[in-house]
Image (tube, rainbow, N blue to C red):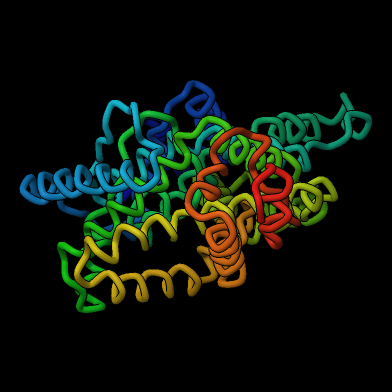
Length: 401
């Protein structure tokens, strides 16, 4: 399968004859393609990463219809239990394979990755007083560093989304808001493969995933919740304090005379998580982290409660499926943990337990009516201290504790 950069290589010129200038031409074509909004390179990289170069079948129409019916069941149950979907125009679903999931996610996550790319590329730009007008190579490299933003955005997005597509079951495996009004996502081949591996009832597992997706969508459809989480994620992504020396070492071996091989090396470098880990957490991110971690803990705790309230009576093998899937979410591979770290998410067992503790504490003191106050306004979202002491939260919002 051709590498994603092949789509923008110089036409009609043998690669061996390109030399350094041919490579630069190809690199600028890549920049122009990205700047012009051409997502094909990003899509190719995401698909290749997701499927490891193999082709994949489309979803059987009968399976698609079956999942659509399960989503309607989940929607009715979530609306009845949470009250968050009242007045909505209905929940629809995209049932897809890895490539289709990746295509949607590329578009949905683009604003977040743009913030991240802008922060990372800022560390690559040399100070203007270090670029001599009499040094054409230095001037070229200065221009190249400015052009790296679109390239980094494309390769970063394709690589990270492709990696997520290998493991995800739906659109909310990571608790990141998606555009309002879009269908929920179910990555059916991954769901069914997991069910076979764990000997789980296929239809029960599918309904569990639909319930998980619809519940998250219901929570993130609350305007002030979606706005708060999105703001924190984007501020975190924008606040990386890049390490120019580390990034410089990563690109220091770039040989402009290597022609297409240089572009291949650039793609591999930008797809390497260690390059992004050359960006270190900044004091601003240290200040954002507690609030982001706390609000995600409260959301995941609420979602788990809503699913337990519905699933234990709706799904015959709910307990077995829940044990398998909740164990899976805290036993993520290093690559999944890397994506979480880049986005500022701490999705470990301690944080899930923190959310469960908050929800249980509120229910014990004020019942479901008290828990529903989470969604009254931006002012009723809990602070980090209140997530750990739900009685403080209830006292602040004037409920008896």
